[in-house]
Amino acid sequence: MIEIPEAITLAAQLNETVKGKTIQNLVADSSPHKFTWYYGNIEDYAALAIGKRVEAANAYNGRVLVELDGAELDLNDGAFPRYHEPDAKLPAKHQLLVEFTDGSAITATVAMYGGIGVYAKGGNDDNVYLKAAKEAVSPLSEEFDFKFFTNLLNDKTAKLSAKAFLATEQRIPGLGNGVLHDILLNANIHPKKKMNTLTDAQFSDLFASVKSTLREMTELGGRDVTRDLYGNPGGYVTMLSKNNKLLICPRCGGAVTKETYLGGSVYYCSHCQKL
Ligand SMILES: [Zn+2]
Image: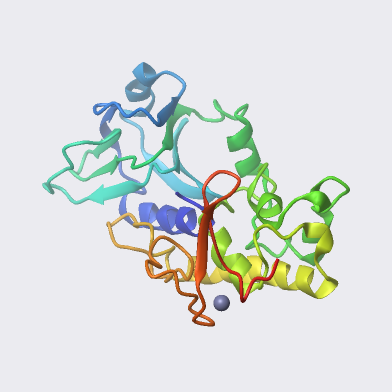
């Protein structure tokens, strides 16, 4: 899924490739996909986008928003965009195709689930997820400091597990079940460990790991389990992910556990991450 490191990488690559270009054609839902949700009316998309110029692409935590003059193109979750040079062969199946006047194009093909939208500027700001993503303080920003992180803890959230605290309820938009595992391994914290059982040192380690792990993932162009705008895997080699096929902890050599917990798989090393 597109999370913070991937959204930043994709937005930068969209600015390199399509910023300033004018949209000549847009096709949505040409290959219907059960788990792709489209915001607003698909029938309106072409009229909103055709003839518009790409002003900029921005990452709002885990979302990529391509700003057009007067409209926005929104890509999130598994709606990864891919760039195609003029005359390049386009994928046979896609959920979104945007063609530019110079012959280049962008497609989005959703693997598991994803969201796509084209709407008038600000037209989807009532959407709670988009609103949260736009307004949230990025963990990569200076404003997201130790005090900010501590303020996320209250009577209710202190009872949550580390996974629930970090990756649910839009507390930290764009920090999802993808980036979570390496953040927790770097902090030596078990995903099921309750926040109110962490020592002060563990809580500090968790804060530091949120910042440093996300920064490293971003600087390296996203995680290796996702693909960038050019179809290349991200440069950050994940420690705990589906790519760790042998389920061996890269830090201690012990066995990694993979199990379903709170929607989605969690990976952890019970030697490095004691419950
Ligand atoms: Zn380990």
